[in-house]
Amino acid sequence: MLPFAQLGGFVTEMLGYPFMQRAFVAGVCIAVVAPLVGSFLVHRQLAMIGDTLAHTAFAGVAVGIFLSSLLATEVSPNLTALVVAVAAALLIQVLSEHTDVYNDVSMAVVLTGGFAVGTVLISLTSGGIAVSINQYLFGSLSTLTRGDVEILAVLSVIVVASVLVTYRKLVYVTFDESAARIAGFDVRLLNRLLVVLTAMVVVGAMQMMGVILVAAMLVVPVAAATQLARSFKQSVVLAIVAGQVAVLLGTTLSYTYGVAAGGTIVLVAIGVYLGAAVVSRLGVARMG
Amino acid sequence: MSVLELDDVTYAYGEQTVVEDVSMDVEPGEFLGLVGPNGSGKTTLLKLMLGLLRPDRGSVTLFGRPAHEFADGTRVGYVSQGATGGTAGMPVTVREVVTMGRYPHVGLGRFGKRDTDRVDEALATVGVADLAGRRFSTLSGGQQQRVVIARALAADAELLALDEPTVGVDAESREAFYDLLRELNRDGLTVLLVEHDIGVVTAFASRVACINRRLFFHGDALDFSESDALRRAYGANQQLLDHHHH
Image (cartoon, rainbow over all chains, first blue to last red; front, side, top):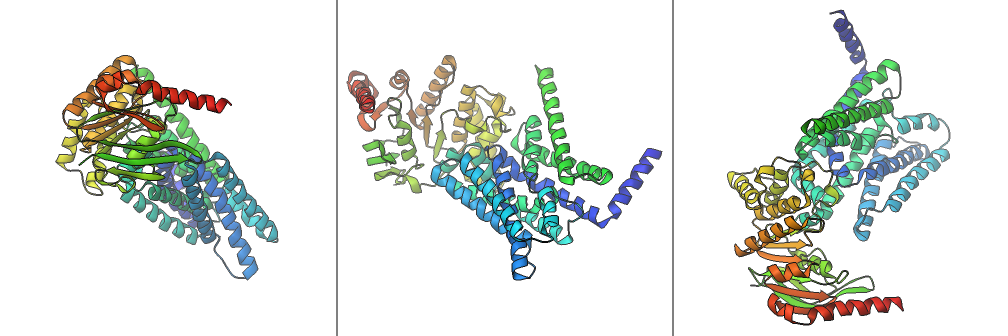
């Protein structure tokens, strides 16, 4: 029984720290909304859009920091990140409506352009900025404030509610966009909603996961679920489960060994994905 | 009332006119085969008919309303080329796909007995009831197209539009697939089939429309075989090709 007692003591100690409590609450929220929205992105070959929006969100963070130093008043980088990412999401969507495709090149331009704007603005805002920028790039458990978690919780409620209300339409559009249009659904509006929800997820999760890695939570748990699920509903549930495993285990490992949280979470998620892939192959072999 | 009415419809992608001055109609209960050479604008014409594209000139009327404004999603079923499209990897069961046909009926509401009954009937009609729990992506091409038709049947569609539905489907399944279309048509479903295989169209359709940018023939399938429309339509394509070479 001793190992269990030790484990219990360890968990109690870990959860005794307010910053770890915040990290777990944030992680659980992220691991619900990111796989939820990601389920619709991945199966429309839109996985790239999460990464693109994360990098433009970084420009938004830089705008917030820049404005704060310029106006000598506190402008929330979260808020500016949200505004910039949502604007970029709608821009990408409107561009794709006019060209009928999600253009690889224009996506790359927006991704790198957003990041470039971010770095330039930050270099203009010299001083103590370089320190705080790392936390946005790579994510951090210790700098997650109560305010950050509250914003994430509010965004999560909005995202979950929006998906619940439009779930059937989103599934139809994901499966067969032309038929969904003929079935009378406003596909353009649904597509815009999906990219805006993606922007919200990315901004909400970026504090903990980091700009560079946040898109992984939209994609990797979904890829894992796709290996095992038969129905779409099942795949959404499994993706959220995979996300939760990644976040809870990853955060714990990050705390225990003092390694980067975002990276650890993503590595655990990839481990879950590989495990799912192996189980899926074994299952096929057995049935065959 | 006609299911579809086209009046002098013209459509261009940029400078390139792909559909020019096409006027025709589709009556309830008919099986119309729409044929033409590759690049003749037949898929574009189908998209115009279904309101996925809006004509540059002329008008398309679907069940008495301008096609691009038409929003009664329960009356039209659509089967695209290779129904799987980008969905090959999407985990979704056969039953889930057919259930989508009921979505325009139920909206945000709960599924009633009538809805599940319609789904069951549709699955049985196209002969995939035993596959209901299977993942869609594990089915053969022919089975997948049957499932997509079942989705239209579950929606209580009056018009079924298909865009070269048997590309990549083996010969035996193709035969059975067109037999199914003929049966559904006999039961009162209006069928609009875009097809490159002229043999299929003359064997199964009641009326034929032959286009190559312009409409070369529109009438009974029997008359089509005896007319020179085919030669003229495909000849026009030849001229088009020659024109590009100079």
